[in-house]
Image 1 (cartoon, rainbow, N blue to C red):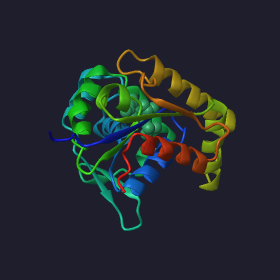
Image 2 (image 1 turned 30 degrees about the vertical axis):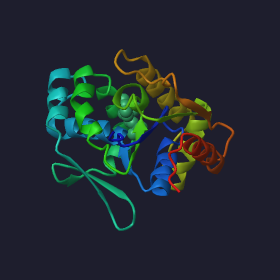
Image 3 (image 1 turned 90 degrees about the vertical axis):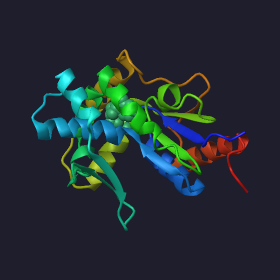
Image 4 (image 1 turned 30 degrees about the horizontal axis):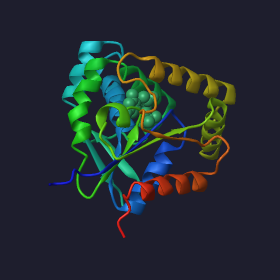
Length: 229
Ligand code: DC
């Protein structure tokens, strides 16, 4: 029997460290990587560029259905994202980019439009998929599902440090408010809300260093027999 291409899903709220852990995992295993949040971010950005409001459900879904997006890894290792050939790598990562993504992601027709596109990333030898509904909706048969979480305060503090290091002028209370607002929208929506799959391994990183979190994830990878000698 042909074995399906293995997938490890990494879901959780914004700022829990999913991106870092997923990249480490994909590098260690030599597997492909799906940053599903980037697709929603590009839809939000495309709306701004096309003059479509994030709440114009039909027009936003139309954009998602015909999304001309491409991903390319630069020699520096940075993943470059383009919409209609135009580089949007930086703009999609701003706080506004996150708000737009979270808003358009609540539209059922947008999620439907991106489903097949996300599944196309499942290519040999394997896929690490980072998002909110990777284990519950997009890859429900994944042999390993991780749900990575941390308190909202800790996530806001981590984001604050990152932005300050980049020289940006930000306020911690405002970041905490944004994170709580985004959590409420991502968890409260009717379609594919953020929640752990029933069979997910839940890891709380609030008081755990990233290397220790990664060690726990690798243990789960070994336990499932996903690490080839
Ligand atoms: O992972 P991220 O912060 O780049 O995601 C941005 C937003 O996109 C997030 O707030 C909710 C939405 N999203 C989603 O609804 N489903 C996914 N699988 C990934 C992201």
